[in-house]
Length: 272
Image (cartoon, rainbow, N blue to C red; front, side):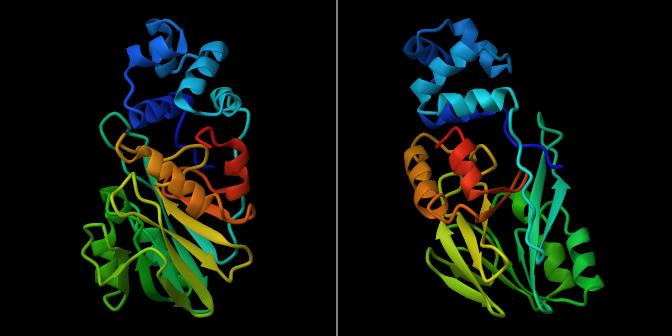
């Protein structure tokens, strides 16, 4: 089981960052002591203080408190034709960090979504099943999501690398919002979900047993990627319009953390 990416204190920190609030600002607006806010950000649970802080930060108080007490975790299966690869990508202060990449298969044709930190397992699956890797779809250019791009190119030089138009990726074909591509009889649609990264795209796949969306760092299970204050409200609105508007049964495949569904995120994610 992949751990949920963000604890409640991470959610608070991201909401504060997105709204340009410091500890003293939040304490004053929420009517709680500065020391209490600092304690929350250190992972100390206090339900009343969490509720007060959530109301200032436009987070859902009940969902945030539920996350603090770890009252729910997803148990969402992937469609049979989708594989998940979770690889370690330690960074200073977050040595346990991991990143997800995915492989979608249709007959003998395959497409990858991001590369993760290491593509060895992904390449083994392609070889073991005698698949043709037709495309790699990149959600955004942050290093952990494209670290193995060179290794994939070397192993499968004929593969087309598709990337967001607004992202600095050395790829073959730039995609914009609304672009569609096919993998056999599967339809892959690009949806802009920028903010965490300037031109990031999510990819909706239709034609599998159930609809799937690969969201990169736009939307995680119970959280979102960190967004600067200048982009924060727009990023939340894009998540609502481009991801949370999808059918509830849509499987959410994020860049970090476990698999969820759109319906579960609407019910459980404190940001919405």
